[in-house]
Image (cartoon, rainbow, N blue to C red):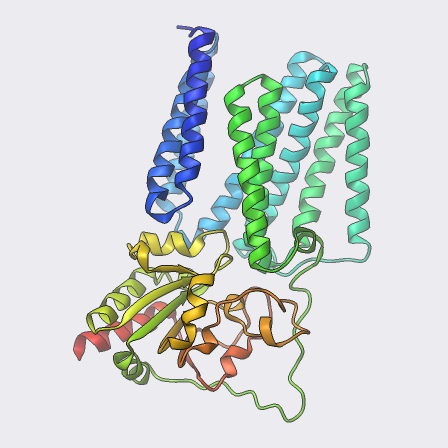
Length: 461
């Protein structure tokens, strides 16, 4: 059965509308799950309509759907929430690779594309190639398979610029030349250089900037899909790709503002290759540790508690235990809030996802700008594995690479408990003077085990 053009266009319009409504619903935590479901049905409609848009070899399509569904099911059931950032990075890369394949196959079937088709083919393979290889490096950094520190060398920006200029020149030649063999040679060169550029671009970015990189690569995958939509003349792919590309750029801008940095500074600044000023002679820097029992006594008397989660909570898989402690504190008469920094974790919204998984009430989640004005009234602030997003050097040390970055001002609370395994710096490799403040107490050990001990103290009292 082949659908009429009117039905196909109508189906694509419905799918596009569901994408837009779903994206809008993702803007708020209490509607995010429904938004995800709405977008899912939009994609389902788009797939079904596409399958009946023309004569297709359904054998290969069913094979592809089966393999893809099996891989998706495996990821959905086996990947831990702590590994979600690297999975997102990898899926961004797969989106880019798909666009490269679509562009190349369309070119191959046309046996040399005309100018109108050659331009989107060039954009699809260029952006898709950069997205794929860059996402693979981002995955490696997030998974610990590649160093989280920026890999820098003299003249790196010049090399990247030359590669980009070469790609533009090859693209122009690919579009205007009429020689089919030259076109084949050129598209191979474009794909190869795009893959190299993706590696060189992301390898130079430090681990602390991964939330920005993830959102940027997500935008790349959308733009590549949009270009692929022009290649094959599929309207819904154009619309959905443009939505992903635009929203990714907006999110990237939000992430940059949250770090008080420009996108150019993220891409070319080599953040993480520098360190903060070392303490000078006579400076006293001694962290004060506290036992779980003593921490319980302070929390038992607290009436206003703020929890600041970070990547350490994700690593320890402590979100459910944290929620249990929050419930016990509320039963004890304390007001509990969860303060979320925009770039906490390894991807945008990482902490929100973990706390939502633990069924923490949405009304207890507060953004940085909402919680900072009342931080001086907080009795106890519990920092669980967060580091750079609570580092007061961003306000106090002009030599710090994060100086000027908006942070959660946990050091203004009466008492600060920092849960960490050791005194090692965070992913950015920057020393945190919060650990040495007079009102800060360190609780060393696994975050989940520490929180479980606090829960036990409350239950036994």
